Length: 330
View 1 (cartoon, one colour):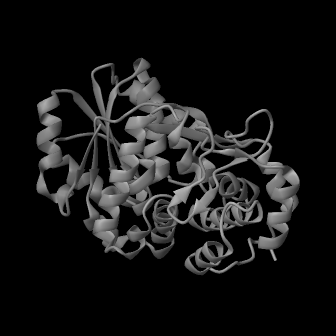
View 2 (cartoon, rainbow, N blue to C red):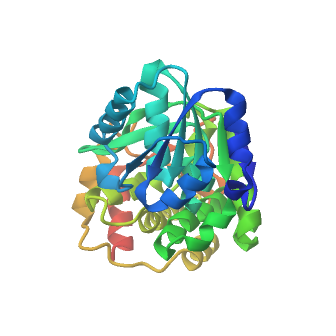
């Protein structure tokens, strides 16, 4: 996988040049809200564009099947180059399709949200949601290229910016506190650099890559419990707050660092009537569970995750989880 980061990249024609060099039949799948970018990417190449509505509740096997049926109807085969254009939902579905269509076709991604640029599109994790939880069915399958054009962020809605900033905060709290002080363009490059290095070391998510789940055990449960009405960013901010509190209660994280983290993260807010019981029920189906126990990534201090005997996530007693939720949901 090669990541190209360049402001104005989509308008430059560079993507067209790379595509033509691969000499494959091309298809675009794009979020219906970013069709203007899809048309810029085609650069008069007469490429069919399939669209999808990028909503978490529609990130399903049914949506994947509908798109695959459209591809089969258009007689796309093994020599297909699929280009996915959109945010994390789009890149996840496109990666999953690419991994399974004709048992694997080449694909590229053009992320159009901050979240997708620094996280979803990087690293080859693809999947869909089910009634039981988020991203429970999917694949590990790398794109040939990821094209990151910061220019598209100018039109990004504030809600989507916050989704991305939650992931940016994650990189800062886990690995590099300075990332929280950088300009957005520099922070994007640094976050991609961190993610790429970790993926190179642990592509299949059996070791160090698990650290990137910080805030996501609780966060994904919150998303599921709300039927995805709560945004990814809001859920992950809350997840990082809860998992930082657990780190503090278990005496790994100092009170000073915990209070610093609470000052950095958005203030506690009511999660639209989401209860502790709702979250605990959703946690039963978390894909990161081991031996039917909740596992979380914990912090030793800011920019230093807790690693014990090469274990990057840690079993947490449910009573501790309940106590943390009681405290943070107030």
